[in-house]
Image (tube, rainbow, N blue to C red):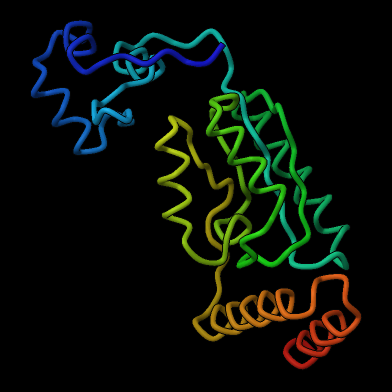
Length: 206
């Protein structure tokens, strides 16, 4: 059974504040809420309990999403997954699904990511955990975060951003864009695609 949601008037009475105060908290980000198709704000029960100081008896349900740019980095993918599992355990999360993917961060057709977002949409999980922001996506992280939050979920980054200078970030973004373009042009299993990716990485990293 999914989490229950309450209208702002009900939440106002529970918290002993005015309806206007609840709306102000929503707009300021103090309370997480979603809008239903009719345009009414709905607040998840977990948010009400948090403000009341009531601890949830059930652990948060988590999805782990790990990603590397290519299949040649499978060892790194496994290590990344193990780090995220330890992180979730330390946070007290119940891991319900682990998604591992070898694909460009700018690829819009990642099946594992879409499956993770679908579970969030169906409210079968509470939090999506990734190691770094760019493990989830090279571009548009804030948009994905907003989508997750609109369904009452949470997008959590386990580690602080890696220290990279502007040149390194630009080079990585360029590699990601070229890789994504070539994948669409040739297909990821095409020999030509594999050759281009290897040549690009060898030219950049030696």
